[in-house]
Image: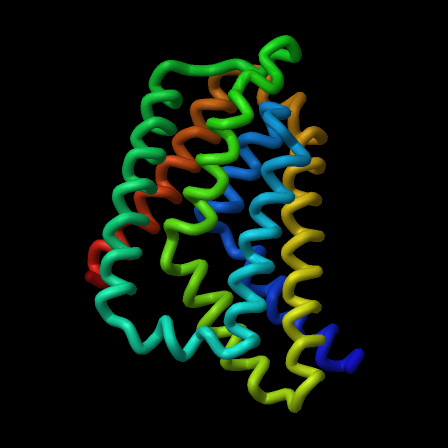
Length: 201
């Protein structure tokens, strides 16, 4: 059981640490101190639901539905394109990290944006439901559930490190130039993922 748990933690961690829409969003909001507990919690919970769905066999159902995959891909690409456009616009404007500006994003907006980057990206489904779900099948019951629990633990650990740890980078982002680079990076990540989704349709 412990072997399966740590195997799941290592595999899940390797997948989630790669730069993606979720990570870019969590990092940028962590730097701004926008809901630094709510956002990582939502991201981790979304991952937990998807991972456990894959571990319990839903991966095969999703993978066998091309129509569902295309709808999710189109919706995800549109969302990421819009968010990327907003990031590029912000880069052109030039921001500055100010203490009094912390937490300026309304909670409702933060929740919707977090759910968007977490659930409107088909890559998340491929990594969690399909890939982790398939790998968990190598472990006999109930060890496959321990594998899933390990992957979920890695998700919670990573998102909170990313959100809370972003504060240590705050001094670097007190100039407009640093924020231009950060916003441009976030926009590039969002548009890059959107492009891969469109090309796969």
